[in-house]
Image (cartoon, rainbow, N blue to C red; front, side, top):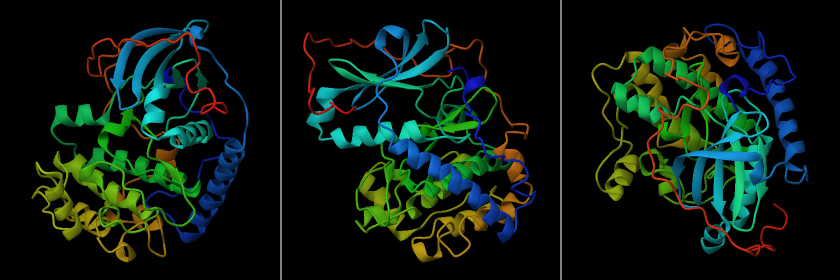
Length: 366
């Protein structure tokens, strides 16, 4: 889908729910009611039994956008409409071999139900003899990771702009009882308007209470995951702290060549802020990178209000961020709707075929 069509406008009005410079508990309660409506929409989508809504012949493959453990992501063009999409092809054999069948169903249901300005969603899905297919909006601006590496680091005004969107996105996901578990610059795309889209929901999980699964990216893992403690939404707020640090410093707060050394640093909660960090930035990071979850921002009595009313965000108009009315600090260079110059170059991948339907029973309900 072209960037101009990425947002599926939410029926409930978003305007004026959030006040400039943070907002009161009363306003937060009003916004929470709005999120409850979105959660209900998500729940109804979760129970939807609709079947496949497209087929492979509807699309023309253009170029490889990326590769992963289960398959390939292609830029594709919808033959009838001429619109561009990112098509994720997941190989059934690999999913079965790695015991991820239930996982693949989860990701599909989550992507089909998402409806928020700063997250991607599923446009089409289908399967054939060899693959499962997820067709998502094509975000031509590419990964935040690539732009961050080119620039070295972001100015704090940029980090605030992106960070505010991530906070609103996590607040939405948590309202839907989803823990994301894979926040990092590689999973944040920047669209042609300069706003973000969180992508890759492979680790996302619907939870009520706690879960114990070890998953994520080493530098972004929360201490409670490393220590094999039961955890909930708190892990996403920890990752937000790591992201704010990395955007502003150009590197994560906990890093080493050996993953075990990274884990030791994370569990100890020891890091050093660069001298150019403002006092306010150091303060908010300090409140998020708390090893003790009972002291971590996002998990306290006031919840997300602690972020929205923090002095580092005092210049943020949250309502305007939500409605994409703030002029972004950066516009990615995009020459055409199908431009892939903001993505890494990959070799063409061989597409597998089979005369019979593989693992038909395992994926009968996909």
